[in-house]
Amino acid sequence: MVATKSALKKALKNKQIRVNETPATTATWISGGECIELRLPKENRKNTRLVFPLKTLYEDAYLAVVHKPAGILVSGNSFKTIAKALPQNLEPSPLEDACIPQPVHRLDFATTGALLVGKTRNSIRLLNKLFETKQVTKIYYAVTIGQMSPSGTINTPVDEKPAITTYRVCDTLASARFGQLNLLELKPLTGRRHQLRKHLASIKHPILGDRDYCPPELLLKGKGMYLHAYSLSFKHPFTEAELTIQDELPKGFTKLFKKSDT
Image (cartoon, rainbow, N blue to C red; front, side):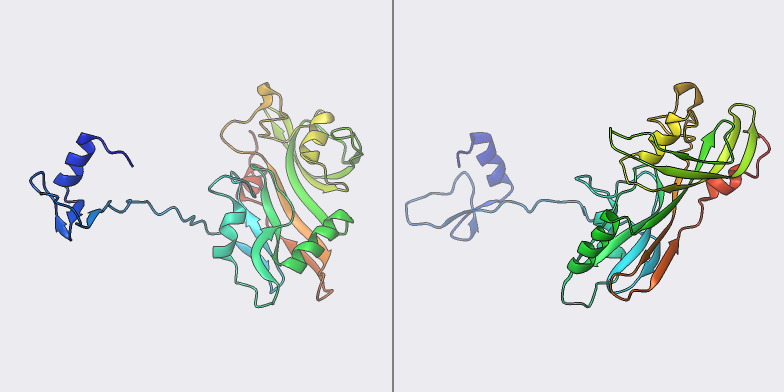
């Protein structure tokens, strides 16, 4: 290591250089055979451990379902993700193939709701298989813009792949700005990326607050996107119990439909 004169002077001033365990100075004489140490200060690192409480909707030794808030990625290279927060929020599995808990599907950054997590290597593998073979029933709720038919099926391809979504209008609200807002129950029968958002935009009824697919003149700024993963239904891969895990609608949904105008 090559040190500059200024760096050596600073190290001597801070008593970081020792000769035979004695702090050295510019007057220290070196004759040969001495033990010379450079003691660098320990880095003052900030605590970078992620602390992010999650609401657990269901948990056993094999799997869990947690509530994903808006504005956080499920996984990825970001410091703050659901995946990184799981170990501090879930009980460690006592099973032999226990591993770090992992999400087995995705929800968009702005989407809220129920997220399924595997806690063992076998459960992660089998839960992924359930999704691949379409044995998980997902129900979402969304708020959309414009007057819609009471129910329907959307089968517009997504990314040139077949995609099917069914919907049912649960409630409506007259709006001075948007004409009409709808509370929709949505069932995606396929699992394409951004399927619900793209499907609703394709029939000219985008999701309220969707920054990617809502026309700029209809964008609701500062309120987030009104898309919520409400429930997951599937057969437990180990106990074979029929599970339906629900995550209640966010307050923003319920408050909106109590208003007479938006």
